[in-house]
Length: 211
Length: 215
Image 1 (cartoon, each protein chain N blue to C red):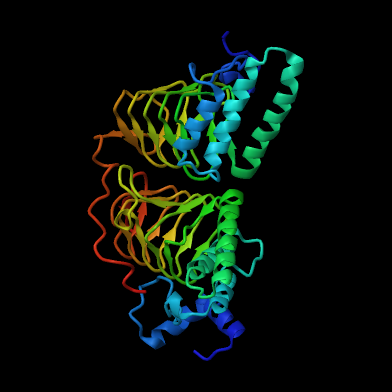
Image 2 (tube, each protein chain N blue to C red):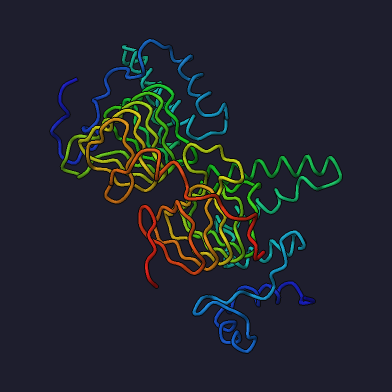
């Protein structure tokens, strides 16, 4: 697609233009939704699954080339998209490209404005992926097999390498090489599998003693 | 403890300052400067459901529109639903609990499973988006919006991998307490702090990851 438009203050222009189906190639909508359903623990009450399903549907509808046929689908999509924002706070525009087995764990409050997200990415609640500043035009590119902790902000024209781990409440505005772990405000690199994976020492005793 | 319900409620909830003034006379080993616990600390299990809900209602400023109150109330009912002897009543109660749990999770995003051992007068502030999968939450704990309690990455979510929040801990908004750690009694966890290690009693921690700061 062509470069994002030059209109000011148009957040949408940071994303791909969204004139074509950006769902993962080589898999039909039904199979894709079934896979997403399994990814979300086969839980029909999972907000993440429904938000992602709306996203997939929004992309799928772009395959309907006839405008008149597409119009009712677009109305349905927009209604569902607004509904997901209002009910769960999950803002997942269809033109943010998302790979397979993407998982939104927990309740929403999520904004995903990335240019691309790879496969097997898990995000949690209160995650923001988007522009660094209003004046900037480019959003992050997220690789494969990445875990993003709750409350993390990933902003700006950056790339997050495969198999990385982004800790809770981290504010990340720099490139991350594959296999790294970052945590902090602003993000610092830590030894992988050390600080984040393992809580320091098991809890000492049983339940709260002073109860 | 023969107080009538409504007066007991007001005593238990409203005048913390009075309690603080009275505390030296009682000679309790109260924390210096910290809030003094209210005397009635019977375990939740020993209380009647109605008494408990009335207390929670008072804790949440008697606000019928407080999401925190409804989340805690659903939790209290859910804890007891499984113990109801009469089968039809139990089935109905379980169904009602599940509906309420999902509704609260969807509308406000407060996820407080009934496996969590929640103490008395726990206050959930503001509008939701909390994931509170702790092992236990003590008495008089205050929790603000966007808080996360849960297992650290790569652990299986069994009780030993979940955090324990002790009595009177104060959790700031956006804080994350992850893994089988213990937040000590009267500790303060600052806003957006990520706790991955034990927090000693009366400590104040802040930052990502959490650092102790002098009080």
